[in-house]
Length: 314
Image 1: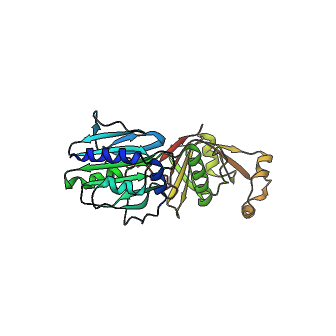
Image 2 (image 1 turned 135 degrees about the vertical axis):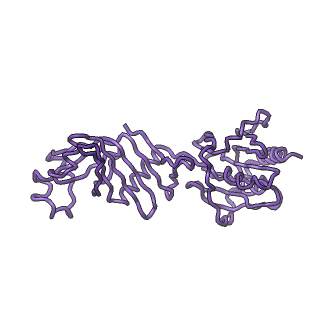
Image 3 (image 1 turned 30 degrees about the vertical axis):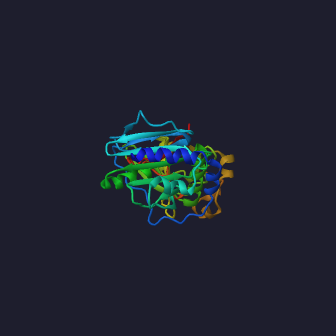
C-alpha cells in the first residue's frame, strides 16, 4: 500500500473520534531530545494557510490534484520522491506517532514560540508535527518518503511552520521589549547624508508606538533632525536576544507642558533648571514602521531571508 494511502486512512479514522482525540491532547508528553528547527534554503516556497499559519516547502513541490478531501481542510504536495500533507483537525498525542509510522513515538517541544507535539524517528521514513495553535482545529504536518536520504528534508519541512502573530501581540511584545531594554540607539542623518548613532534613554512607548526622549537643545541630533527628520530607533534586549526597530520622523518639541510631563529625576545633574530650562528639549519619534525579532517571545524572522516581523504603523 502506498504511504499516502495509509495516511488518509489514519486521518479519517482519527477525525471520526474528535472528542476523544481532543481529550487525549491533554495527556502529558515527554519533552523532545534536541528538537530544533532545521535551516530552510532560500529558494523554498512560502505556503500560507489559514489562521496565520505559514509553512516552507521545496521548490520541487507541486499541489496534488488527486489529494483526498479533508473534513476540516488541508492540502497535499508531491515533491518527486516524497510528499507533504497539511491537515486541519482535532488531534491527540497518539495521532502524531500513528502518522509517523511503526516504531515512532510522540514528544513535546516549542517551535517559533508555538507548542508542538512531534514524532520521534520510527521504522518508516516519515515525520509528523502537530502545531498547538489553540484554535478549534489545529494543524498536523506530515512528510513521507520511500528514500532514507530524504529524511533531513522531511524534518526541515515539518519543523518549518510558524504562526503569524496578531497586530496586538506584536505591539505588546515590542512595548515589553523596549521597556526591558531601556537604553536604545537613536540614528539620525547629518548634513552629508551620513547616519549618526548614539545611545539614548527614551520614555516608554505610547500605545501608537510614539516615543519621547530628552536631550540638550545644543546637541548635534537636534540640528540634524531639524534639517532632516528621518530617523531610526533601535532597542536591544540582551537577555532575550531580541530587538525592536522603529523607523519614522523625529521632531524637536520645546513645549513647557510636554516637558513638565516628561522628566526623570536622575537627569538633574545634566540640565540647568531640570525640565524647566531652555536647555532641556524633547524629541518626539513618530514611527511609520516597526520591525521586531524576539525568539523568546515567539517572534522569529523569516528563515530564508532573515527579515524580521514588521508592522506599518501610520
